Image (cartoon, rainbow, N blue to C red; front, side):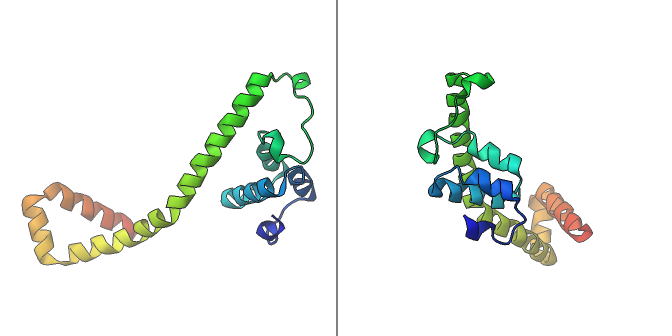
Length: 142
């Protein structure tokens, strides 16, 4: 955890909050903080709050006194787990998607530089040609 957050501006209270987690959950929380670029105590608390009891160093204090029922707490934990799984799936595909988005404008520009391709698209697929030209104009403006 400390390695992931070493060069980030993280408040001492944030580390205190993260120490409530077991080491494997600390690493997950630190990875989420880095991915979201959020290092606040509030964000750390939002990661600690839905953590299951078995991933905490100390058991949680009873939340019933704060107005949350056991069902509500269980629902929050379940939703948090779903969000983390969804986030991991998105994170896994991010690199490939980003590469595609970087390479696509160059490919479209090369297609539109070829007179034979432009002629074919104009004759057989004018709607695609129009979209490619819009994409090229947007890329030039950026």
